[in-house]
Amino acid sequence: GFLKDACTAFGGHIIVGLDAKDGKVATDGWSKLTGHEVVDLARKFEDWGVESIIYTDIGRDGMLSGINIDATVKLARALHIPVIASGGLSNMADIENLCAVEDEGIEGVICGRAIYSGDLDFAQAQARADALRP
Image (cartoon, rainbow, N blue to C red; front, top):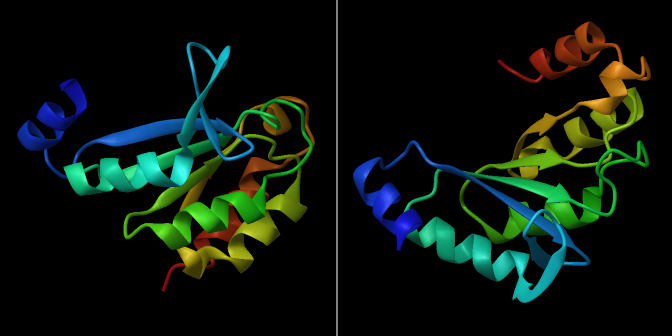
């Protein structure tokens, strides 16, 4: 298939976004929940050579309700590739919570609405993330 071929051709340069709710992968603009477990699909993609996974909890995306730390850590622990958190980031407390589990394999976070709404100061969040680097 397309993704497997892309991983073969461009190994180490493919990042895949997985959107999920309650551990199940969603497709078609989040309109359909599949029976596929996000962890199982991510493992398959890892085996194909995907470099990283962007994990979005669609139940939280754009809601400013906080990152689903437990589900994100569960996914990261199941893989040997980095996970980028997405969906629900609301403020610096979420940044702090993610920094606290950074050693679990969570490499970054995507933030949108929290910046636009003014609930998150990007410079402050970036400075906190930069402090993790040696």
